[in-house]
Amino acid sequence: MTLSVSHTELDLKAELKITGSKSESNRLLILQALYPDIHIENLSNSDDTVVLKEALEKGDGTIDIHHAGTAMRFLTAYFASKEGCEVEITGSKRMKERPIRLLVDALQRMGADIRYSNEAGYPPLKIRGKKLNVDSIKLQANVSSQYVSALMLIAASLPNGLEIILDGQITSTPYILMTLEILQHAGIQGKFDEDRVSIEPVDQLPPSTIAVESDWSSASYFYSIAAISNSAEIRLSNYRETSRQGDSCLAEIYRHFGVDTSYVGDSIILKKNNIKRSRRIHEDLRNSPDIAQTIAVTCLALGMECELEGLHTLKIKETDRLQALKNEMEKFGAKVNITDDCLQLFPTNRLNEGVHVETYNDHRMAMAFAPLALKVPLFVEDADVVSKSYPDFWEDLRKLGFKTKESV
Ligand SMILES: O=C(O)C1=C[C@@H](OP(=O)(O)O)[C@@H](O)[C@H](O)C1
Ligand SMILES: C=C(OP(=O)(O)O)C(=O)O
Image 1 (cartoon, rainbow, N blue to C red):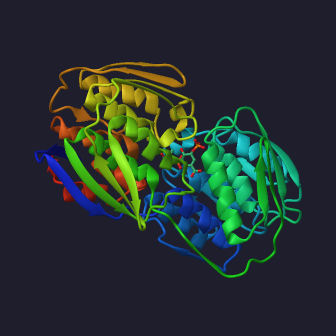
Image 2 (image 1 turned 60 degrees about the vertical axis):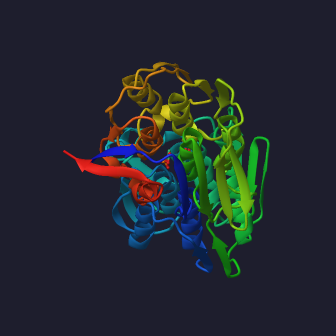
């Protein structure tokens, strides 16, 4: 479905409730499968969470997790440690290009029975669940933090718990901290010191209820909208000032774009201020890769130069996000330089109208470019990709006065 997206109002106001974080939800679902007395509130309605939940319910045979990276990585560790199960985990064409060797190697060294169905190092995987009995393992941590989280999630269910020694410069660290906090909240003891994570073993956990906070990565699109608007007051419910999600750093980053955040009860209120903002920004996004696209497009809309670094993981996400950003931002008239881990944007004074934004099966390409419609009407190709993390995205945008129309 191609959507034309435009906006004519000057003053944006709305109260929205974004779905629960898919990262928190997917961790909690794995934990709940291991410790059934955990009750989860505000579970995400994203595709990535739905596929993980269905996979756990199915428990054997062929499991298709589509585009969901966390589901692929977390389920690999979960099924490998579940004695007696036999599964093949597969996914979308892109999932078969997203590397998983580091996690599979670590699990195999722990005694797991995992084989590659096609190309070594990539899904699909054939797994026979076994008792894993190693209590210390070394893991390269500079490619994806999801490998670390996957081992942490099963660690307490192993006979002696698990120590994970992290090798190389750790990437996406806040996601490892999120996993640790969720484990601790559920009653599992563990710690993360410099290059070492250790998790204590636990047979059973007492009943607990854990509430998922709304998704901060999804909130980024409203930060971008507020930044690009002349005037905006957007209230987003179910957020906390002390969040488990690293992307809550948005509140600080978007101050550079003239957006103030206030925390009122369980909500955040984003307000545009008219304080003069800088003409150029420079951010290291090693800890929050999922908001790189949002920030780049905000800069494009505001005619700000930007230099984003720490982006080495973007090439192995839903698409090569660096190349996709370059391709699509240049269609609007900007000049973009990319390297393996850095993006430099030289914006244009006059954005081209009526651009067709390709989304490359990447939800964040669709959602990051949509706010640009405050400046110029545009088209978003395959607009329903948003359901990977935020199925109600377009409906929420319409509540803010955006006009969307299916086009042929
Ligand atoms: O653990 C998680 O929930 C995630 C970790 C990050 O991946 P990497 O660690 O691969 O950067 C992030 O990009 C992804 O959207 C979700
Ligand atoms: C990279 C992402 O997800 P995953 O790696 O879990 O597919 C994302 O949501 O931006």
